[in-house]
Image (tube, rainbow, N blue to C red; front, top):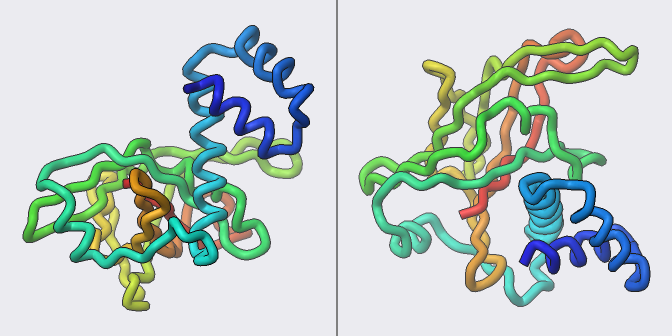
Amino acid sequence: MIESDLYHYFASIGINEQQQRQAVTGVFDTADIDTIQKLCQKEKMHLRYESIGKNESKEITKLTYEQLCNSLKKGIYQVAFSIYRQGKDWKSLSMADQGFEKPAYLHLKGDKNYLELAAREMKAMTKGGAMLSGHIQTVKCRSSKDVLTDFPIQDKKIQIPFEDFEFEQLSETEITGQIQLFMTSSVGKKRMPESMATLILKI
């Protein structure tokens, strides 16, 4: 499975078939399995993000919050997520992706369903080579109903209502949720007091 994911990864970045075997062998010889899995997972998230909203794909269908909740059992689930920049760099991960612990936790209680994110310290390198560190300070979310809401960070955690996400089914086994975030951080505050990004959740 990991080997096929690697072939898919190298094909996606333009490596021809003849060179793919050499590239895959080289990765297995020089990297551990955990690193390879992370590499493949990152590429899958990028490809998934690029496909969201492209309705020409017959596999992608919109799901309502009610439809999704009816198919999920109550409980607490670990879920993967990534936070992407918006604008011309929308295919790149936002610095805020480093600002939260992974995985996140999806709480489904019936009367209250929410995604819980745990904030952590993040670091960034300036163009001059200086290392900056800090943390996410404020978070606003634009819901699927186009309502902008402030969410407080309490005990380094933030709870985003599950119903505020927009959901899409990419295939029989892949469902994603997405929500627009507006955040400030203590890293480079003078240069970017508030940044906009999109959180993509894999359910």
